[in-house]
Image 1 (cartoon, rainbow, N blue to C red):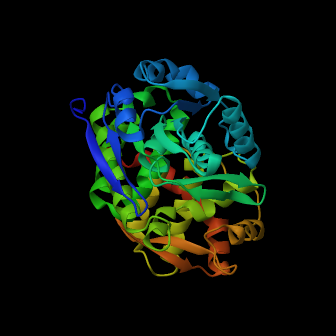
Image 2 (image 1 turned 60 degrees about the vertical axis):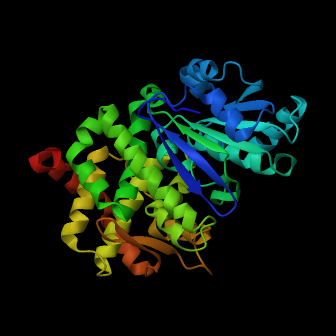
Length: 383
């Protein structure tokens, strides 16, 4: 089928399956046809949240006109609600709604909706088809692509989950117009992540056009979304289940997940916690002699320039280290970090001495303050 003008299809060639990510303003309009082509004609069950459906529901309903939609099921998409109980509740609702193995779940929402709905799709009746319609920047550039699904436990984030690749992902940046500004900027931290670990050109683009991107300039938005999707598609194609190189995508997430856990998912948005995590990883990399201080300064200015991060909690370094050691990325109790080693380059699996982390943790708030103030005064950064 013909896609709308200025829309691109990027193929994700994972080991277990291959599927397209359709990107572009207006890419939502042929959703019904796309679903038939890539997911079949079985009944559709849309899983979303009340706040997403309030803003995006009319547009998504219009795009699904003529499709075999059996039911729309709404659930709480706050991070604190991303629990096994939510999965059980949704599975029971699907059973009562008559869902069978020929069903397709359409996940319409941000990262939490995608994670929960994806895990439901992976486990309901031992697996049904899944389609993502991401409605946040973070989901469009990252979480909707690659097949990771999961929910949280009190002990840590995403500790229960499965890999379940979708049949289709549709990224329409016009859906982002409904986002609160804080949510939008939180998604920009994931774009910074991709630039820092894999794409020097994207990093330079962010430096040059951050103001326009922050104002939802559609051309700039499309460029950064496409670059991020292509990076993730390539990485997932080489390592579907994070047995090796895919771990580089966890830049900022080692500390970020711990911050979300110790604050009960109520203080930071995910991207904001990752922002603090990237700041810490950059400083750790300098301390270990892996990253040039001048390069680290560029990264830190970039992170501080996205938005003012919520203040760090007064949690001790010992408590943070304890949570990080329980994270699924640690091995035999040793925390493994992704550390930047240059603009667009990073290494994964780095063991960081606890004392190095403790020093960085103590200095982190002051580094963020200095970077933010320097960013405000630095005309070259906003040029």
